[in-house]
Every structure is written in C-alpha cells, then in structure tokens.
Amino acid sequence: MKLALYGGSFDPPHAGHVAVVTEALKHLQIDQLLIVPASRNPFKELVRAEGNIRYRWLKEIFGSYPKVSISDFEIAQHRSVYTIETVEHFAQSAEKIYLIIGADNLEKLTSWHQFTKLDALVTWVVATRNGVAIPDRMIRLNVDVAISSTDFRTSLGTLGLEAKIEHKILSYYKEHP
Image (tube, rainbow, N blue to C red):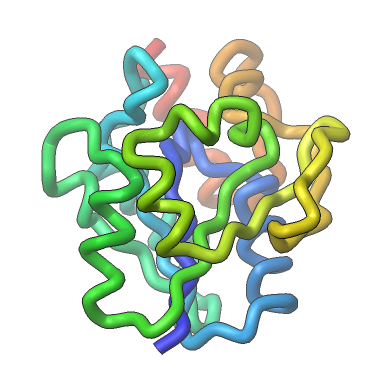
C-alpha cells in the first residue's frame, strides 16, 4: 500500500489544510491519505482545542473525501509523539510512505527527532507557504492559502470552510479563549 501521512496540530483545521489534502490527492499515486492530528506538537507549548475535538472536526471536514481517513494514533498516546514514531507505526502496513509537511517546517526539519532515520523512510511532500524554497528532491504541492491556525486563534476570523463546521469551530474558540 502507498500511504501519505499528513500530521499536525490542526488547531484549528482550515482551508489551507483542505487545499493540501486536495492537491495531494491530485498529484500523489496513493492508496490512502491519513490525517494524523497531534495530541501535542513537540514544537508548540500548548493546543487550544483538545485532541478529540480536533479529531471530530477533521472527520467532519474530510468524511466524504475518497481515500482520506483520520487517525487518532497520536491523540491516543496523550503526549507529544515524534513523527518518526508515527511513521514507524504506519510503515508496518505500507510499502511506501509519503510524508506531507508545510514549507514552514523546512527551516527546522533536520532538527526533528531521528531525522536521518525519518528521511530514509519517507518521500517528502511539501506544501508551499510564504514563498519558502522547496528542495528539488522533495515533491512540491502548490497550495499557497493565506490562512493559518495561529492567525485564526488571534483574530477569530474566517477559516474558509463549509459554513456549518466553520461556525462550530468559531463558537468553540470563542467559548474557550
């Protein structure tokens, strides 16, 4: 099986995440794209929405997408899970693993836990962001969407999602400042 993993905090999920998934489905020859929300991101101090809430939002957003599933693997660990752990977990059932990241992660990528081992196990797929250069050896997804979870949490603006789920997410963040 050819598997694409797309991890992150998704705190909250937004149109940029949807664009990444849409582009990945168009350009990668995969059997499944697995979205893996983090319980806690090792590079971030905290998350505003608990993992099970973000998991439900992602299931609602991507529930009708062919080949897309949401995994609670990292959330179930109740701790920060390194990407290498997630990749090794899913590598048991995959012949090839694509790892989807945003270009904003490239600057610190080599500092990720067990990067050399991780680099040997995956084919990197990088979503464009803010004009960051993407190395030629990595697959490029053109998805410059001017929305970020951080900006949303600050401004409580739009997420660019379907109205029902956007209202649900916005209400949550207003109730949990």
